[in-house]
Image 1 (tube, rainbow, N blue to C red):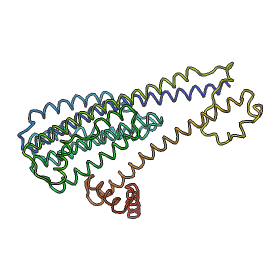
Image 2: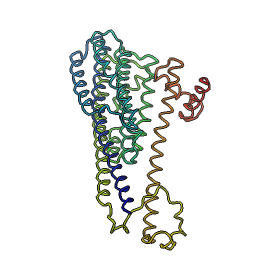
Image 3: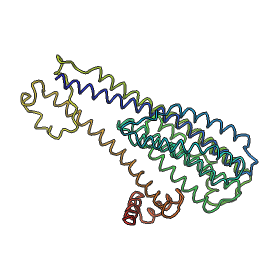
Image 4: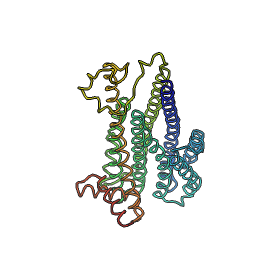
Length: 406
C-alpha cells in the first residue's frame, strides 16, 4: 500500500505540474493577445495612411509602432525559457517563427512611411505576423488535455481568429472606400471575410462560458451603419467621399469592443487554470495514509466490467474493504471520466478539422500559387457546388496531393 500511495502522490503532483504549465501558457497567451491587438491597430492606421496617399493618420504611425514595441517587450518577458523539454518541440518552433516575423517589422514600417509598398502588400505583411502569433494560441488549444481548460482555449482562439478576420475586413473596406469604388476582388474578399468571421464566432459560441457568450450576443449584431456600409462594399454601390473615415471609425470601435471580450476570455482561461490547480492541490492534500486505506479512491479509465448485475458481487471477492457503496462510487467516477473523454474528443475533432483544411489550403497555395484567401475560397466554393462539407473537400484535395506525390 505504501508503494501505491507513492505513485498516487506522484500522479497528483504530475497533474499539478501540468496544470501550472497551462497557467503559464495562459499568461503567455494574454500577453500575445495584447500584442496582436496592438498590431491590428498599427495595421489599421498604416492602411489609411497608404490608402489616402499619405494624407491621413501620418502622426499616428509612430504612436502605434511604439505601442506594438511595448507589447512586444511584454511578450518576450513572458515567453518560456528556450530549453529542451519533452513534447515542447513544436511550440518552440512556432515561437521561433513568430519572433522571426516580428523582426520584419522595422523594415515594413519604413516601407509604409516611404509609401514604397501598396496597401494590399502592407496588409498581407502585417497579417502574416499576426498569423504567426495566432498559431501559438492554436497550439496551446491543441495540446491542452484538461477539458474545461481546452474549452476555454478553443473559445479564446476562435474569438481571436474571428477578430483578426474583422480587422482584415476593416483593411479591405478602407481600401475600397478610399478609392471611391470596390473592385470585384475586393467585394468577394469582404463577403468571404464576413462568412469566415461567422464560422469562427459560431465555434466560439459552442465553447465559451456563459458570461462571455452573453457579452458577445449583446454586441454580435453589427449596427445598422456598419451593415449599410457592408452592403455598399459588397454590391459595388456608389461610395460617399467620407466613407473611408466612417468605415474605419465604426469598424475600429467594433474591434475595440471585441478586445474587451478577448480580455474577459483571457481572464476566464486563467481562472479556469487556477480552479483546476486548487482542486488538484486539495486532492493532493487528501492523500490517505496507511491507516485510512479503506477510503482510498480508485480512478478507472473505463468500467465496462461494472454491469448492473455485477454490483451485487460479494465484496470479499474483490477486496476486503470494497463495499457496494464503493462500487457505486467507482461507477460514477468512471462515467464522469468517460464524459470528459467524450467532450475532449469533440474538441479535438474540431481542431483536427481545422488542421486538415489548413493543410489543403497550403497545398493549393504551393501547387497553384494561390493566396491563402483564394485557396480558402476555392475550398468553400467547391463545397457549396457539391453540397458537401468543406472538410470532405479538403480531404479529397489531400488525397489528390498524396497521389501526385506518390
